[in-house]
Image 1 (cartoon, rainbow, N blue to C red):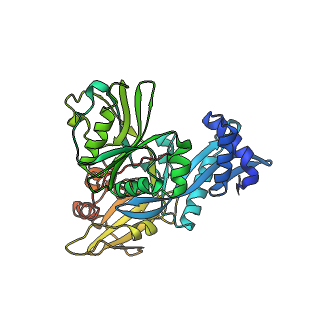
Image 2 (image 1 turned 90 degrees about the vertical axis):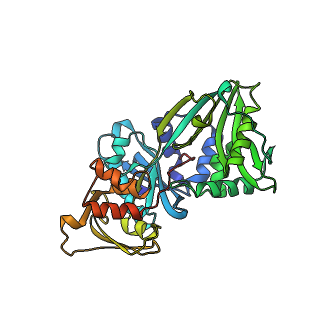
Image 3 (image 1 turned 120 degrees about the horizontal axis):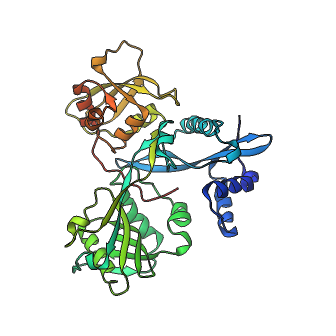
Length: 391
């Protein structure tokens, strides 16, 4: 198996593979847009007899974790021609990608799986889900007067960025969006309507990206920083009641929209979404903002990671009273009554905030003495995971 880095000269065969594997036909305009982004991604392919047989993209992103920005490698565009499948090429590409991300100090990786079970074999684990709603017009929230105002139209990218960043920092696993992300993905072709809620001081506190088409109100993003903005945005949506039959949207898994309705019997669906993987235990934990402690905490982690050998082994984790951490591999003898045993998937789910250590111990995903697991639980701040983007 020969793995090579793709260049812009490989664009056409790479796009042909993407179109076939993902069953899409791109317009010339879409292809040119992809071509312009091609060189900004780290794209690797497997060749046989000079022909591209499989490929994988590593897209450089940053993600918020407990309000801090982490370098993240987004895995996308994983595809193989059918005649080359079952040869282990994707496994080889994923291992290669882990090595590259580790060298590039991308300590965490996200991907959208075609199969959760497939990517679990290589160390990725579910880290986020969202709630999908369909709300009939008759069930919409009651209209409420708010002191602020709604303004439709384009507010300018700076306003949207400011509100989004303040919102996204509240969650783990949201993307840090640069201008290119906004222009090339979020606001594609300007197809979404925009509305911003401003408070009495004329400060933007929330926004909507939406479409009204064929009697449906489709919310692409609803972002609000406080309850006043939430009520103002939903009143704006409800004012379309003579034009629409249904509102569709997605929200964080913990969202309480149904509870706040007069009739909560609306369609709700919890959708498992993206997976995450710690690429480097040392890099990730060294950056990780643990909770402040009354006294320093020492925890021993025995990490299992078959596909990233630099993570495999026994680690000494020290968390200072201010929440900063230091971690190093240890060769000192460790007994079972001192050690938390965890695979990389479970460690990722715990540190991303998707699952708590005591819950994972209860279902047999991590093992160790209760005192150590409780110490880890207390050291990890609670924060919900969410992701509005797709790649």
